[in-house]
Length: 537
Image (cartoon, rainbow, N blue to C red; front, side, top):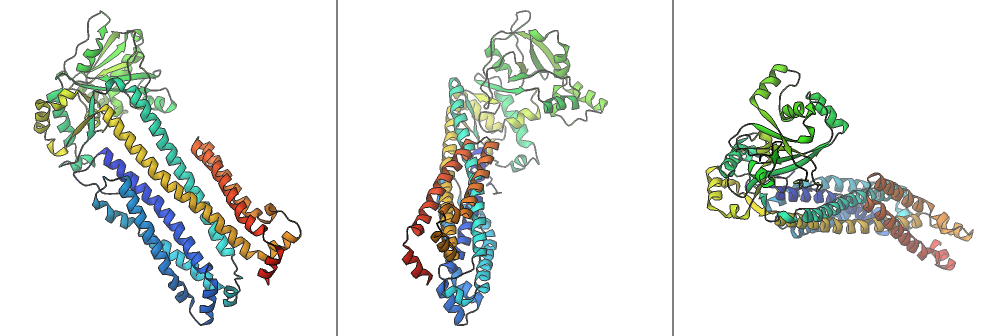
């Protein structure tokens, strides 16, 4: 969407750009609704003036054009509000993003053209006497406002879905804070810039992967430097099909714990003979430590001997290719004894690991997936560091020697990283919440407008029905049905998406809409019949 500056490439900035883009789309939609409704009512509210202009011989285009200035003022005001809100919510956005935002407003020209066309049709198809007597044929206008009401209701569903997602992220962030509490002293990569390696971030080069591998090789044996990650492999149908495709035997669900030799030492894991398992960072062999419980199950051996194939580009049906790949990627199976559980290193799953398969990643045995992971920002990065390591001269020298100085690597503690994420989530929630408020006002205003148009265009019919004793529910059943069906569909969507925000949000919205329509109808219903007769005459 937006092009990133070469000195500001990172997950945080990407996240911000994505937010800005999504908010721009939502604001564009809101702006479109406001422009069309305002344009139509600039004709409808000044119907007598339009009638006089038609009698004086003004062309329909000239009449419409005289009201177009109002639309441009609304567009300018709304766009200024958009820039201001984005600037307040996301202060880290540079000035270079504003030309892009202007570019995204170009479709408004199409909207304004459509708005002008609708106004032209309204003015051209009505007689001058209808404008002067305020007896406009409003079927087209009612259809347009109904369409806008349905559109804004759909937009409300989308925004509530986004707010629901952000609320879940805040909840998960709180769980992560609790789960990673014992590891707050560990540092992870927080920011990384493209620097001179822009091609690496567009997957046209793997230079930065080589630089990161070289960097890790220099610090791998230092105290306080280790690799750690965990993941869970379930026994889903898709997973079984993946195993079958690569010629792997089907295994029950298992947890995979990835550790470097230095991290392995912390766990004091021993083999079946009671000896501590020690592996050197210079060893290119891939080691898989399997619980001794599965020693007699040969499926595990066959599975992990070929496990590396899954992330390869080898054709599984070409046996010669498969054999060549496996020969060049040696694997050794070691059985370990352990009865305790391991803490999870998965940022999205805090469940403890019982009898996990341990994959030992050595500095010499790093593969492309491992090195690509090292540029991931946040908790999911394999590389974990101690505070003293990050502050050491040797660490900074390793960065310089690996040609990573231009990438401006920033390491923060896990606690600070999570706090930064939480701040972003709250900022986004506040931004979407403010736009939801604007949208709710637009929905309620469209209902009021629809009711006023309905009353004006059916004034005589409503008066006769009132004399005959018809209830307001019967007289305004079209509006009540429109609101009820629209909100019911949104409520069903909320249940389908399992989103309590959408479901309960539209229950509250339905109550507000009923209250607004009741108050709007009440003004007419409580007018004296003598006053209505004067209006009809």
